[in-house]
Amino acid sequence: MLQGKIALVTGGSRGIGRTTALTLAGYGADIAVNYSGSREKAEQTAEEIRRLGRRAIAVQADVSKQEECVRMFREISETLGVVDILINNAGITRDNLAVRMTEEEFDQVIDTNLKGAFFCMKLAGAAMMKKRYGRIINLSSISGIRGNAGQMNYCAAKAGIIGMTKCLAKELASRGVTVNAVAPGYIDTDMTAVLPDKVKEAVLAQIPLKRMGRPEDIAEAAAFLASDRAAYITGQVIQVDGGMGI
Ligand code: NDP
Image (cartoon, rainbow, N blue to C red; front, top):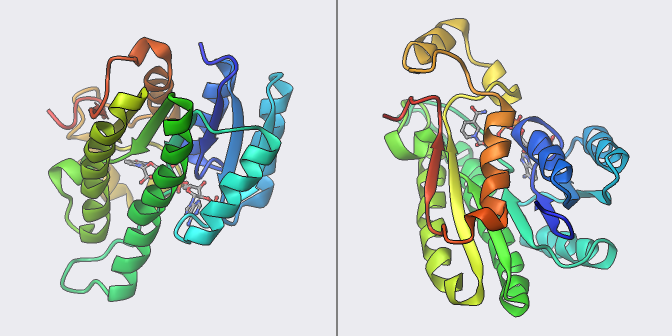
């Protein structure tokens, strides 16, 4: 399904990103596994991909820093080639009630989750335009659609991701590049593991399918959007949330 394609997964060392990297590789893509601090985990993911018979590199870059994104894209094009599929997955939370939220907490989340995605879309988009082919998949969140108490920074970033997705979909459609978003509900990863049991129970009660999502649930949606089977889909947000957003 993705043979001959080169994919960059930001935040591919853990959680949804790691599973997405392995899933895309399983469908035949070569993968650049980006990470910020978890070098060992990213190297391990890349090694697992190589064992699947695909090419893979682990590439360090803090996506909130433009110069690091520029270096990352250069490294990828020198080793694997031009990126055909970009999965903007890197993300953090710094939860706090709005009235207590510090400027630093707000900026950190915006810089990583929103600006980081902008830098990567800008760099990938320029090359994809020339190639007249590309698939960009951005990780939004149910929090960016419905809002969530304690996450003003995160909700702003994830709602912003949807706006950027629709903007770039319109800008790049004539060049054969599609841009879509996946909005997960509550997925079982390090990000949600830190939530108190009381919060987890309250969340579960809101999920019609009665379970937390798994990284695989998101990875398969991303793989579909990355494939030629989704060639006529652009500017869309697919909610993968067990029905939570209904
Ligand atoms: P995890 O916390 O498990 O993993 C986060 C990943 O992002 C890690 O690989 C981490 O790298 C990377 N990362 C963090 N900051 C940076 C940075 N500045 N530069 C590069 N990489 C960075 O998160 P999830 O897998 O749960 O989430 C993945 C995405 O899905 C995020 O965008 C998140 O907002 C979104 N999402 C998740 C939901 C959930 O319920 N889990 C729900 C809705 C959306 P490193 O290991 O090096 O730190």
